[in-house]
Image (cartoon, rainbow, N blue to C red; front, top):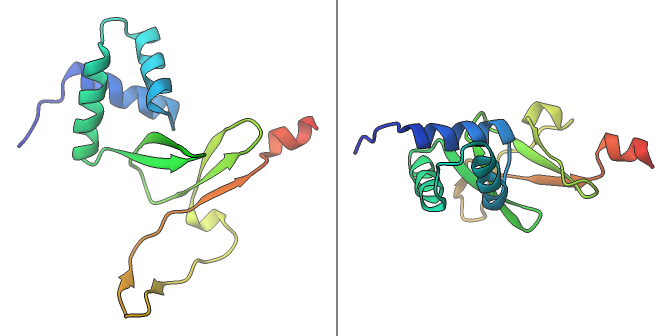
Length: 126
């Protein structure tokens, strides 16, 4: 089923694209502060549509679900001090992750990692 790309859906997508990574609460707060005429139900409904259309995905970081727009394959770096979330491309890691398979021979085609530490800005403040 092809859906119309409504103005509200564009606002939800563009807001998430602007924020980079956002919990549902942070996304709702941002949208309601900047676009006063969008209801909570409309935001959630459009988030579901965007996820079903594979334009947005939910990832678990810091024991919390956050949303992001789908872009090239990447991992995440989360600062334990300030909570900043940064996308990390595979070539930025410094080592190549191996191709993996399960003991029964099943191929693993994709995996996702989150790295946790103290970002360079927080390190400079200490």
